[in-house]
Amino acid sequence: MIGTLLKISWLNLRRDYIALGLTLVLPIVFFSIFAVIFGGMGERDRDSALDILVVDRDHTELSEQLVKTIGDLGAVIVSAPAPELSTREAVRDVIRTGEHSVAVIIPAGFGDTFARLRVRARPVEIIYDAADPVTHNIVTGLLDAAALRAAPDVLLENWLGELTRLGGAMTAEQHRALDVMRPYLRGDKPWQELVDQMPNSDSVPDRTGPAAGVAGLLRVEATPARGDDRGGSIIAYYAAGISVMFLLFSMTAAAGALLEEEESGTLERVLMSNATMTGLLVAKWVFYSILGVVQVTLMFVWAALVFDLNLFTARRLIGFSAITLVTGLAGSGFGIFLATACRTRAQLTGLSIILVLIMSALGGSMVPRFAMPDFMHTTSLFTFNGWALDGYLNVFWYDDPDASVGRGLLDLVPQLLVLAAMAGVFLAMARLMARRWEIEP
Image (cartoon, rainbow, N blue to C red; front, side, top):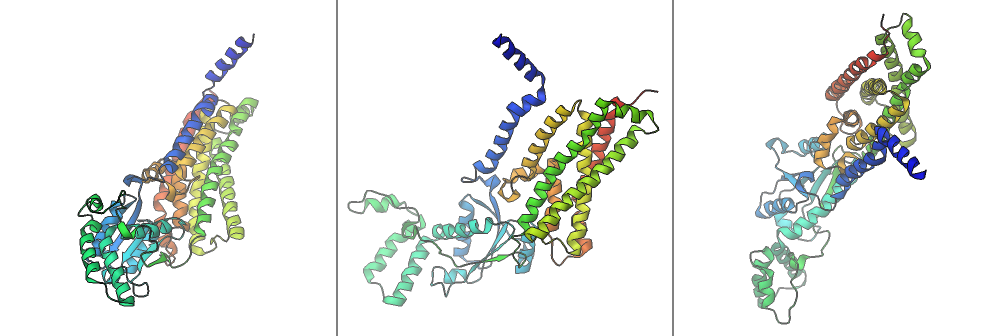
């Protein structure tokens, strides 16, 4: 008897593809997405590396070797600066617009002051986006590691020169020892060859030699790209990510009323009146859109009042209103389409959970974009969440404080057009699916 009941339960589960997917497929999909995002953070390959713009204004052998070493570390992609990036303001604008994650400016005179006392050293400047709380700290440590590997011979020689200046000249024997070690420090000869010449030596020193373990080698100055602290922009990011995700959930839940009206016979009675299916869908689309706009607006107003989100400026209010309107229209269309595509409320609930969670994970609603590999930035463009988030990022993250309202709206045109197109496609597909409810004359 128990075996028969187990068989019946399995057959019921196998026939319900939505429940089967929620039970067996969705956990694996989610695991795979987050494994891709976080699994390679310790060993990032070059395809998912942090994009750093390096501007070399020193143009010496040492600065060129430092730039090469940054690339050889395998943790970054070094982008060659264009001629128009000759000024600091031009570099700042590139980071502000999100074209690169962070910029490193190697100043003129860097080679002459390398490994000197800090009061004499020319600082290397990092220009970063303050809304990203991680990147510039990673780059600071990366620069020290690159400096250690780029020119350990120059490092040792300059340090000894500083000691000589402070405490007295080196002996002739010390100079000869330095000359012997120089090719090994530079990597021209293998360390093992030098080690074999040393009595009672049984270990090979690190490639960086005497410089290993030294921290804070370079003098670094970190400057936000916008000239102010935009750490609050991360609040805008999560406000957008969470509100878009729950917008989709609420829209599909609200659109489920269509299925309930079908089951109760209300839909049939409405269609027997003067109402048409097209008019009914449009009316529900408009109502759900208004509901969605109110929901998203409340989220951002709460963020502004409680978490100090800078919302109440003319440029941001207009940009926010535009992107929220089309997001609400597209989200409402998505919910109505899913409702017309499903046969029961249970199917709608299961399918919406699967689709919304996957789109939210891929589109950036759950994990900040700067933590994702580069290829996932492209993947997010195939999701509703990705385009909606891009619009909000342009309003709150990559906006130019000096831009006009018109310029701010112009920057939103791609997201506005794509979301508006999504709304149209969803409605057209919903109208096609709803033909099964129409009463034949």
